[in-house]
Length: 384
Ligand code: AMP
Ligand code: MG
Image (cartoon, rainbow, N blue to C red; front, side, top):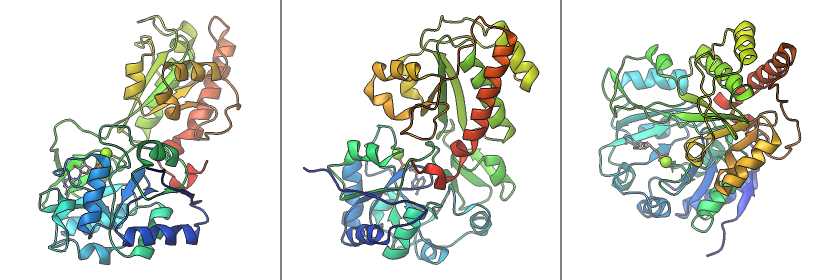
């Protein structure tokens, strides 16, 4: 089969014709891949049984695993649920349109296929302008599973969607690169306290300010995202960067992003270098005294959602470990841009003076401060 057409839609200046083309496909029962505020999604008319079944077929997804559905407004939502429980109203007011999926009792309107055999529906209004424009035109709810084959990594770019599903979907709307795969938080709001089904973009602590949240039903929180910082020895740059990023995330109350570090040529269990420890501590109170170096492995790369390197040669090294990792590797100084990879290496301070370590630490801090908002939010900044 031939590859699906890939249509570029700049989220800042939505291309009407592209949206209308996608809308016609959806309304005719087709399946379109599109960007959301979290990752790329697979869209079919959620009220069309056959179209929904195709989404399951395309993904190779088990029919008992329900799909999240996107709606354009609360009026549309109302038709899909038996009732909107009062805590749900409060949560929508506070968090929508971004990153929070609510589970409610489904109405008879919703085809059973969407619900995976259950009685509940998971709904969200998306913050992404591309899919919102699409929803405004189609005026039917849209399915929103990640646009990947089950078990494969969720796609952050239209190119990745095309690689995995290009010969199975009817159209791919290219809205630029997603910042990072932090899926939406999923909360069952049928009764109070609400039940957290998946940790995600909206932190549980923030939700707790609005409604009482009970235990995480699944036991282990899922939806965690891993960022891997890479340098050569994992005793200086990536050790400092990892420690600092952890601290910055925890200061923002972000618990969904896990930070690891590794070195392309690390000696297992080496401690951080003396100056790395001293400088990280005096500059920013970052304690990396317990850090132990870890050698970069394919396994570690496979488990990571985003890999940030200090130099271009490290990037090349990782690319040689497997082409499948190429999409998630970025030079720290170039992230999130995918094209220009020549923005510069972060120099290796190994064996040099304290002043060099300070300079390197400050450069890393500047870069991390720059990318933090991109990691955490801002769908509009996905543009390549
Ligand atoms: P995915 O489609 O793989 O991106 O993930 C969607 C997630 O939403 C899965 O973990 C589903 O189990 C979950 N989900 C979808 N619909 C429901 C529902 N009605 N009740 C509970 N969880 C749901
Ligand atoms: Mg998925």
